[in-house]
Length: 107
Length: 341
Image (tube, rainbow over all chains, first blue to last red; front, top):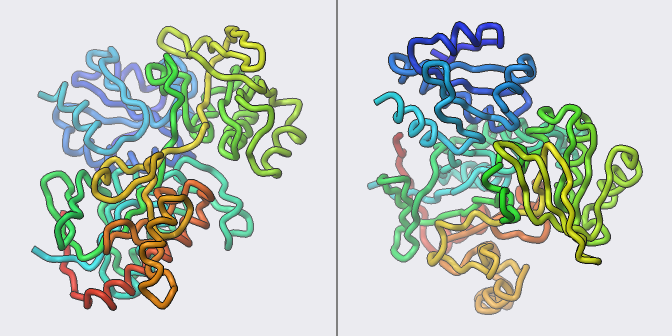
């Protein structure tokens, strides 16, 4: 099951008020490295779904939220717990860095 | 354990070309494409100089097509990073974490990645206003002040990408002229002279900011003056370094870390070539072979001179043919098995 997409109007409900931690992937269709990270995040979304929700947001359609979150390079993933940013990873470095990030809050 | 005929490490144009040739030769190549597969072309937009695409092609799209072509002839591909190699014993060992693979030959096509300046603030603010890929990140700099460091084609492309979004684009270059190709220089210095400024003879000394880039400290090399300039972003485009960390001590590298082959681009490679020139009636055997018999290298991991998608594809082809001939003439081909992940 691939990761769900949200837009900035859903952010409050789906990220800030989420009962479990959320990893939000800021991406764009024109971004080469985002194409590398997408299938990995889809796979992890399924694997971690009981502990962490993985969501995606298109930066072109949601510029305001991207700016508010100081996203200046993609892919950027931000991990939120109880509505607060607890970690972020900028750029694509393969699957393991994502796993390390998720495992820190999953366990 | 199955012993493969050949393992290809790296998945840019050199790697895919080598895969296409060796798979069509029915060598059943195993390719470790790496987790960041596709290499530098994944960080580009329009590729206008790769022959065969009249209107140009997007870099990531070009890599996807090459991959499909290699897979059509049964190249076995894993998007895994090779963590260690052992070329001191035969068959060669290629490790992915704990998992060991064995092969009669190896083709190295790991390419190169962006070099950084190493100035204060650069790594701390990476992704927070410091970037090595304007074509990836330019859209975040709508109506912002930006700088590009460098003087080659890549720097010109970065500056052009930024002109579509940024309020201002200034290139910082330490010499008084660019080494970029004429067409790229013209696009910057003539076609976009109203949009792009150049600070000649200038070095970036430091990047400053709290949580994001705010200021640059630059120094004029001619008169030694330093000053602060306000900015929202700085794009580092000063060249590349070869991805050869895992090959240190396994094959000969030159002083910049590029793999040395017999195909003479440097004194070290000419020396290696000379040692093998007499083997084939005065002709050079297996030009793409490294200092280790049976290990070949191609593309940007070897080539500090041309560094084009088309030259890398050509190098990959040469390495594949050398590898095929070497396996056939010197080894006798065995059929490999199937790796599992």
